[in-house]
Amino acid sequence: MEEKNKYSVILADDEPGILSGLSNSYVWRSLGITVVALARNGEEAIGMIRQYKPTFAILDIKMPKLSGIEVLKKIKEEKIPTEVLILSGYDEFTYAKNAIRYGAKAYLLKPLDRRELEDELTRLIDTKEIGLKNDSEVFPLPPRIFFNSLIDGKILSPDQIEATLSNSMISISNSPCFVVVFDFENPENVNFEQLVPELNSSFLETKHKIWNYNSHTIMAIFNVSMITPIQIAAECMQIISHMKVSPLPYVGVGDVVDSIVKCSYSYNRAVTALSYRIYSPTLRVFSSDMITNRPPEFKSEDIDCTDLVDSIVGYMIRDIEKQVRQFISRLFYVKYPPPNYFFSMCFELYRSVLERLRPLDLDERSMKQDIRNFSQFKSSREIEEWLIESFSNLSDTIRLRYGNGNAAWILKDKENEENEEDKSIRIAKKYIHDNIRTQIRLEDIAAKVNLSASYFAIYFKSKTGMNIRDYILMEKMGYAKKRLMNEEASISDIAYEIGYGDYRSFSRAFKNIYGITPSMFQEERKKGR
Image 1 (spheres, rainbow, N blue to C red):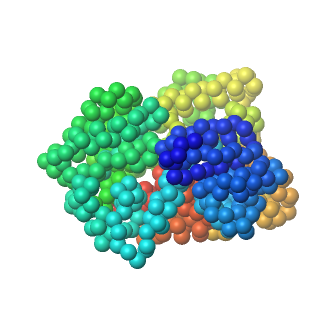
Image 2: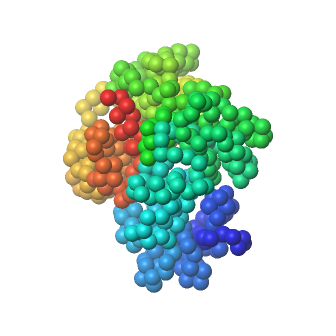
Image 3: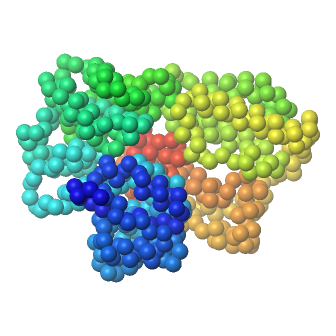
């Protein structure tokens, strides 16, 4: 236990693997947090919280003896100052709503995204640091909190900005500037305490600020000078290379903005530029001028997978490869299409093929792929090869099960039988569409078609090839996307409108579907005007 750590945390989860992995995370060291105790059930958790009164507690929502919500209620009733983050395997509004009702500061989903955990804890720590000051007093903020607030687009008063920038320790001015983002793949191998000062000392003649944004990212803001943004990024990479950092980070360079107050826009553009690395895995520096504003002509509704399905059931492997490569080539209407467009179109092709093959009653492992898998690929070529391999494996599975030619007849017969969509499914889809702004319960949908909830869930999947929960999610995100096309629309309002208790859960769900956050979607819309 290190005395210098200002904050403490208790971790509670009934799964030993999760508890062990969480307790050994680099997040605690990077944020100066001490893990003071581990609990495997709710009773242990509340006992340890009473004993240690930690700054934070991370509680699994489903634990033996006492649930995370029940522990949270006791903390509130006993007025213990510990701030709670709920960890859950359930992305349901009811759980989130109850957690928020009893004072949870964040609602995180399993499998836990360590970066999201770090972001939430950073936000809470920054709030604590700012809260130590009197709100009515104009005061200079600590540099890290100040610059993180600017990057995150938080509103700071002009007096506060002036007071902070006048600090002799800050060598940057409220004038034209740009943001550079350094994203490290293996942060545990990087000595940030040595690297950041080295970078700062290398630009003494240029007004700038370089700091640790979080445990995997170094952030830099440079005032405009005679050195171009790309030249500065290249110089930084040379310094990082000389310090034997491997692999080198990916670097995103944002647009020049006219004042430091607007650097959150430059930051968002730098992050968007970083997403273009899927097109060139060997390239390390990506600037905002790579971002395309030209809208695509080939859209999801234009996808016709008939020939591809025929090749799959006919065991024509060469044709499968040819058709996938032709599809991918259509996506490159510019040299670098928006990565979120590329991801969503590839997923839509995959989903469409699975839907067409559904009547063959293949096993779950052959048919099912998590929608989030697409965003985990590191390059467009990986996605292309994965599609070819997946469709080829499906073809092989079908041939082994049905023999040559039989699957095509079965598909044709079953498609003829299902030409007119099942009435119960039509009613269910209409109910979901009509109630998209409410909390949609499976029991309510099932009641509309006079079936039990458990049977209807199975029935819906057998008829559509999709889980009812996934279908509702897709519909909600589709509605949200339409609402976000209005640039004046509040993202938080839209989140609550479709049943999300907090912005982050909504943002993650939206990104899982479209490969881009709601705020970045709105920014892209603005640039495309």
